[in-house]
Amino acid sequence: MKTDVLKILGKIIPTAIFVLLLPFSIIYMAISKVCSFIRKFFPR
Image (tube, rainbow, N blue to C red; front, side):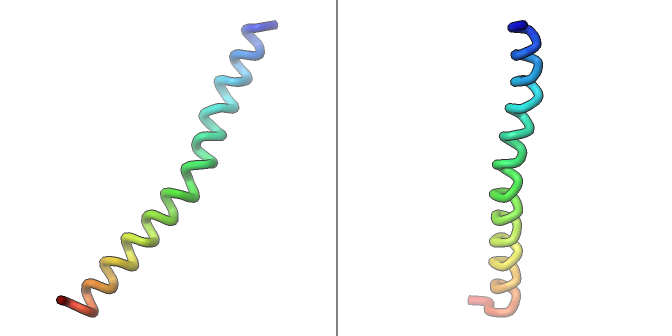
């Protein structure tokens, strides 16, 4: 019984971490793209 629970947790936890991190990585990539876009058009 305990091994089944551990197997289920072993599958759920990485999935949950991935689902939580995916939006952050997408937002981070979007922000970095916008920043590079702004630097191209408005050089200091």
